[in-house]
Length: 493
Image (tube, rainbow, N blue to C red):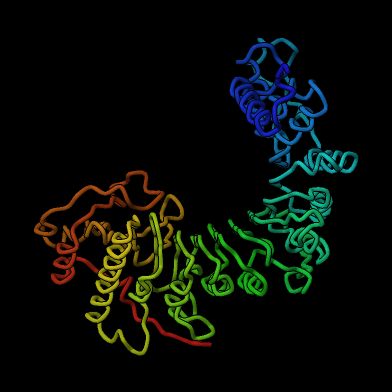
């Protein structure tokens, strides 16, 4: 019996076609239309990833119906649907030599929602194509009309696993729309990952009365997040941003494995802890990185509105493995459960030390509490090392967000970065060195850590010293820890 490529098992054939499509895509990273590759790059720019996959499988689609179906699944597996934001101008003539000249003043007009409309029409005419979509990404569509179009597209994607949506979909979608997305489908599949991306809108967009709509769909019993495994909320907006009350509503049904809340300005640890509490038995990855003080400064500081200690809430997640979190305050309780199995690089940021039951009565007590946190972290890492688990914990304490000439900074001069596993402290010690007339620190090392917007400025330059040298600087008054030791008023509401 003669064996041909057409008679190979589907799994083996799929591997071969996948490699062929990949190699084709590697050699054609630019859109077609002009013979010269350099000219293509100038005229059209890089091809979108989904368009590149479609071009790469052009020859495969023409072989037979089975290869055609495979090519569609390969090309439509991930879709990026972005609003057109071009500012192209017409060329003065059809000659390529005019590329280097001045373009025409006539703007090339395109319907900014054309791709969204065509995708909806395509899936409406050929629903079988939509079954190939596993991930879909929408960007730039923030109106009520485009929300209707997006929900219409998602209706056909009955095997969708990951979706990235504008945050406005929470406000404009009905409870039936969201129930259809989040509920298990007849074919046994279910959406596993939801990403909500927020941006600031222009003033003209904010003045539109239709954009002020809020259907409060998260309050409906029909909206169930119990089948989601991953939730990511990124960015903030000047129009109906995602708030703590939204996270609390999500926590009613959420049972998450991965939780990411990053680059936000309106969410506090209150909403974060609501989701953590709801998913404590399943949560494996936790990331919380706000861009503004509300993410660190909570009215209750070391306790939430239920009176529970935040550090204890975190360690009550037995499945937690990866952690990068920002909290108002921390204490040694965060490293008190030796049964936890954190792995890799763990980053913890806090504005200060937890103050409970009057434990921090003097600055000396607060300083001792800081080093108690570091010792607890070291002991926890040693326990993990004994289990052959590699764990590196970095703790950042102090004031976080400030505005300098270059914009927001992630780390201020009042913040200290501790690396317990190296017994090092990173900070800007310039003023301390000046106050000590150069006698402190006796030895310091260059540091690669520091404000993300410092651009190597000497004003923000960080260096590192050993913990012993840091303690000496504190005792002799060369280092101020006022940003960490500030008296907090605890209010349990």
